[in-house]
Amino acid sequence: NAGVTQTPKFQVLKTGQSMTLQCAQDMNHEYMSWYRQDPGMGLRLIHYSVGAGITDQGEVPNGYNVSRSTTEDFPLRLLSAAPSQTSVYFCASSYSTRGAGNTIYFGEGSWLTVV
Amino acid sequence: AQKITQTQPGMFVQEKEAVTLDCTYDTSDQSYGLFWYKQPSSGEMIFLIYQGSYDEQNATEGRYSLNFQKARKSANLVISASQLGDSAMYFCGTRGSQGNLIFGKGTKLSVKP
Image (tube, rainbow over the protein chains, first blue to last red):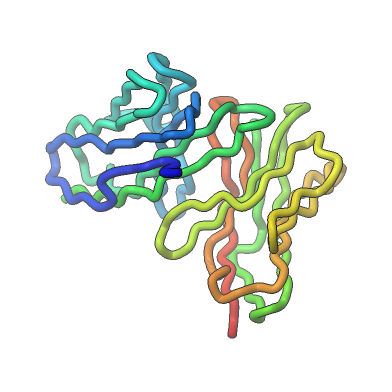
């Protein structure tokens, strides 16, 4: 099983550039989400989706866009990169949000540096 | 709102010994779950174990077990027979209202040979 696949693993961007972090899962999970992890700030939710065609904002959505055209894919777009977006990004998914099947599985992470 | 507290920023354990990582939680939900994840220095987030609030028995997964005490609102992770590869950050968590994982600050476990 591939699980949750994130690409790229490492990326350096210049301020103002845009890019897309790709995320795909092959577990037929309805719930997908993007987090960023910063030292001392823990894991913060950027955007999430409870199913194809449905997305919503998390705690820190500014500067990021998402879409969910299929169950499998949940790309994260940085519209105009800023140094404050230097972080480690995790895509995560689960079958449900409550009860059985609500274990969240993470991708391997994407290390993004904005210079 | 849900809250997770991990009071041990760092822990040391001798190889082959058992270690307990503490986690307390606060939630107003009647039904909830507690998770433990491991984050090695390579950075990935690895799911270890899950305990549902209505599960009658403590969860176990290989060398990992969860000491769940509902009345005390604690969900401590016990790692038996520690190995050098267990050195990592460990996070306790629960699901928030947006379905997101709410983590504690984590405990850095160092296993000594």
